[in-house]
Image: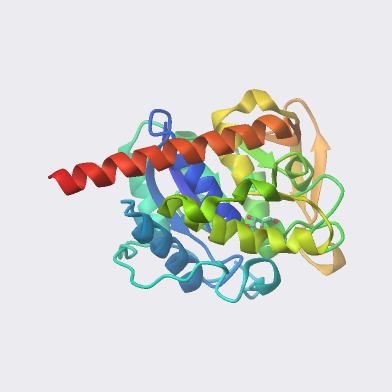
Length: 313
Ligand code: RIB
Ligand code: CA
């Protein structure tokens, strides 16, 4: 299946991308579109360029929205560091975004292909702009798998999750459309955790493992400070749902969004079997972690083979 990854990297965005890259047999990444979210657009775009460049991974990166539809950007330095990807320090970067805007890149990719799926790992600004400008693409988007929203709680406000809070107006446009949506809520992410101990020993391994250590070591700090021994890796739930839907549970609903006030970004879930949103609420955490560890191994072998072939040629 052809996939566009719309993201604001972000530690967990990168883990979602690693798992996707590990499965070229079922995921063909047409490109990455970036959106202002966890940090400003230039920062999150540079983070992705740096990661792909460091690992020598090819990919098209296209920059999208510089800000949410109505509100101002609100970078999240506590969770993600000053530049949105605290932890690793990169020297040089030889990957750059293309000139084409994300909306045009998405439109052209959708028109050129039979069907596509979008992984939405940040605020829904780009996707709302796409369907507002080109409503005819809605029928060609098989599904949008979104990390965002919650059933009853929050991580930025008491009842609001960050991606939907970041741009509630765009989220409303997307939920109100006829798009087929899967929603990886905060609640399902309680079952999408990685144990802090998994990264022990990663520093003595390959570049992929070293980078994973640096990214997750920083990311895990937030939960460690609360005394937890596992962290939810939110955006990874999206790739895992695509690869292993059988480990997830959920129910269909129509979803509304609170646009302002103390509940800005709260998702209101109206369960209905005819709803366009599959709201995920449970997953098998053991399998989630096991599959991620397997994906890292797969990607590591792929990168080793690719790099040794390049040396031979
Ligand atoms: O609430 C979790 C979301 O916000 C994830 O997409 C994560 O990357 C953060 O920015
Ligand atoms: Ca994200």
